[in-house]
Length: 231
Image 1 (cartoon, helix red, strand yellow):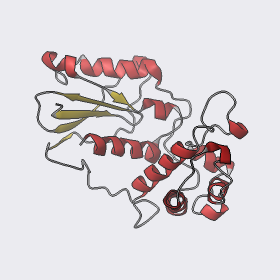
Image 2: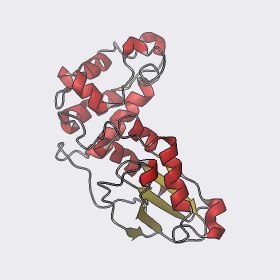
Image 3: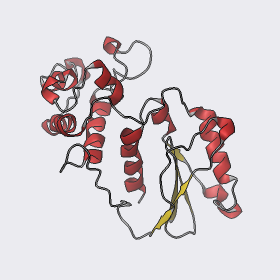
C-alpha cells in the first residue's frame, strides 16, 4: 500500500511517484537539467508538506478565474473530459483526422481559429455543432448528455479568455529525453529517494500534454486532478 506520494512539479511537467514507509505528502521542485533542455523558469510551487490525513490536497485556491463564482479549474476539467470522450476519437493528432481538425483539446488553437469565442458559447462553432446534434455524427454511437452540453456552455461562457494561455513556450518541448532526464535526476538524488525505496518508486508525467500544446491554466487543471486523485 502506498502511504506517501511526492509531486515533482515544474512550469512544464509533473512527475508523480509514491513510496512505502513514509508519512505525508511533500511537494518539491524538480531539479533543473540544462543538458536536456528542461526549463524551470516560472516554477512557483512552494516546498511544503501535506498531512496524509488530507482528503483533498487543495492549496486553498478555488481556481476561480474569469468565471467569478464558477470554479474554472473544475469547469475546464469537465469540458475537456467531454471533448476527450466524444470528440477526440476523430479529432486528435494522427493520420487523416476528420475534417482536418486534429486539435479538439488544444484550447488556445481553437480560440485562435474561432472555433471557440471566449465568453460566447452561442457564437462558438465548437459548441453550436455539439448542441445542435451535428457532432458527434450519428455513426459515432455515443453522444453528449444534457449535462455534458451544459458543462461546455458554462466553461466557454465563464472560463475562456481571448488569446488562450499566455505562458506557453511554442518552441520548447520536453520530449522523452527531457522527461527521462528529470526522472533520473530525481531518483538519483539520495536526499529525495532513499536506496531502499527506489524499487517502489513509480512516476506519472504530464509532459506529453505540455508537448501537445497545453500549458498555464490548462495544464494546472490536470495537475490538480492528479493531486486530488492521489490524495
